[in-house]
Every structure is written in C-alpha cells, then in structure tokens.
Image 1 (cartoon, rainbow, N blue to C red):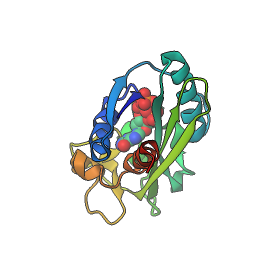
Image 2 (cartoon, rainbow, N blue to C red; image 1 turned 120 degrees about the vertical axis):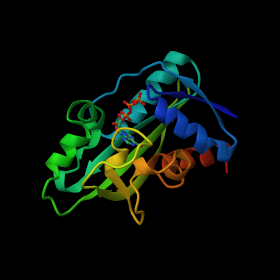
Image 3 (cartoon, rainbow, N blue to C red; image 1 turned 60 degrees about the vertical axis):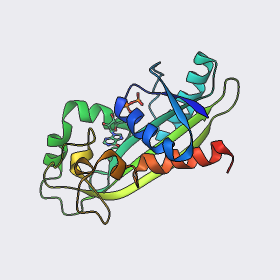
Image 4 (cartoon, rainbow, N blue to C red; image 1 turned 90 degrees about the vertical axis):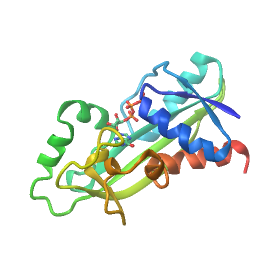
Length: 183
Ligand code: ITT
C-alpha cells in the first residue's frame, strides 16, 4: 500500500516513514505545497488535503501540527511554524521564565482526501511540559524543549524510533493507518 504525503518538512517524512513501516504502508513524498488557511489544525488539514488531492489528482495525506502551551493561553498553537522561525526555542524559554505551570502538548491532525470527495481527519496528541533548558540533538524545532509525560528525556534526546513510540504524530498517523487498511 502506498500513500502520497504532501509536506515541505523532511523530518515529518522521516517520522511518517518509520511509523508506517509498522503498518505495511509506504510513503511517496510530494513537496507540492498547499495553502495553509488561518484556523484550527483540523480546518488547515481538511482544506489542505482537499486542495492537494484536486491538484495532484490522487489520494493524499497532509499533516498539520503545533505546540500548545497552557500558561501562554495555548500559544504558539497554530502559529508554531512562524514562532519557531522567529523567536525560536530561546524565545519560548524566555516567555516561560519564572512560569511554574509548564504544561504543554503537541497536537497533530492528519487530513486524508481523494479527488472530488470530502476529507477525513485523524487527531493525535502527546502531553508533557516545557523544559527550563534546551536538551538533545535529535528531532527538530521544539523537540529539545519538550518533555513528554512520564519521560525523563526531551523529544530532542530521543531517537526517531523512541519518539515515534508515543508522539502526537504517531497517534494521528496510526489512527489513519488502521482506518486506511480497513482494520
Ligand atoms: P508542512 O506544513 O509543509 O507539512 P510545516 O513544518 O510547516 O510543514 P506544520 O505547519 O504542521 O508543518 O508545523 C508547525 C510547526 O510546529 C513546525 O514547523 C514545527 O516548528 C512545530 N512542530 C510540529 N511538529 C513538531 C514536532 O514533532 N517536533 C517539534 N516541533 C514540531
């Protein structure tokens, strides 16, 4: 089984490839780009999947994700990409200076769509907290400042296989994979 994954983020492709290998699904990476409307992750994934499926003329998945920090009113959320590129992890740690409630979660929504049909979405989340210091050389973006629940390492200190055992992306892609295979 093969599926077209529309993304410009190579890290997502590597993670998805590793996750799907458990489910007998192969990925074809297509860096087509799609309009990211401003809105909730679900809306972005639905609109993006529908648009990309029409443009490619084939079934596709897209994935929209973000880091949601409770004490910052769930910022950066859907602005994660922009925030990572501008203030980065240093900026987030600064905003979290002296903040006691460090609860945060990564959320991921996979959108699947065939041309001329309506999209399906699959939601994934991983709970955790924001570190005081960036740690680790693995992963990407916010990984070095995020401790998943019941883990004494940040995502940045986990190998891709370890992160993939319980990440937000694992949860959303696994739901999709089971549905796609018809389990
Ligand atoms: P595509 O939209 O092309 O797939 P993107 O990098 O723009 O790639 P998103 O809009 O879904 O993807 O991502 C929002 C940002 O959230 C992303 O750029 C990272 O900064 C951050 N992010 C998402 N998943 C992450 C993860 O697993 N680890 C660390 N940061 C993550």
